[in-house]
Image (cartoon, rainbow over all chains, first blue to last red; front, top):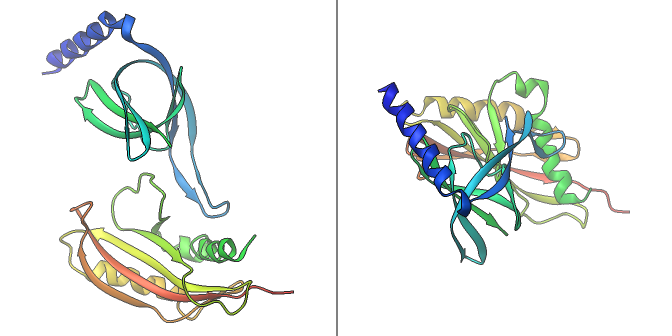
Amino acid sequence: MANYAKLIDKQVHNAFKKTVSLQEEVIFNLKEGESFNFGTGQPSFDSEEPVRANVLVVKTYTKNEVVRKQLLIERIPNLDVYDSVTMSTGKWKIGEILQDTGHNQIVEVFRG
Amino acid sequence: MGKYTDGLFSVYHVFDTDAFKAESLKVFPSNFDGDKGEPPFLRFTVVPGGPPLNAASTSGVLLVEIFTAWGVGPTPANQIADILDKHLQRKTVGTTQFFVSSADKQERDKQNEGLARMFYSIPFAHFGVTI
């Protein structure tokens, strides 16, 4: 079972490499360990880390007056609303994880 | 700060005291989307919708949603409501006074069926100073 997982991981990685000309290099700004600070009245985080990644933009669309993109990425664990992604078009907030195979994800990002 | 923010921070202050922290209850404000972990946990909303005494004052209701695991019966939620009463009912925090609480029936949470939710509410008045 573990061998199949390794094989799938490798093939997903290979598939990403083959679409490299269509990909965009982006930076995910990952904030971990979120809690609410009652003293300041603001969310606070244990750590903040930039992670460089390649994404494939599956589509861009507008829904409820909000511009959204669907990004295909190699899996990044623990993505949530407090994280963001900096692309050539600016900074986008992380929305829903639309699909998660355990190896890759389709992540919705949005502005607005 | 203004009367709405001051009233809100009075509630924050209650949940930030050593006495309340000693209860080991996880409390989050509405519109905070962080990881809440295993139940029980509480989510609160301050609704400053009551009649003000003057331009610097507000009144309204503090709503607390008590989330417990679904299937464990009503006892844990009611015990938590009693803990909230101990820290809020007929208490004055700064210039905010809390009155007498009430609670609604417990039901299965619609967004997360692994949770049961009970509403606890307590009216409050925040007294500001006018010059």
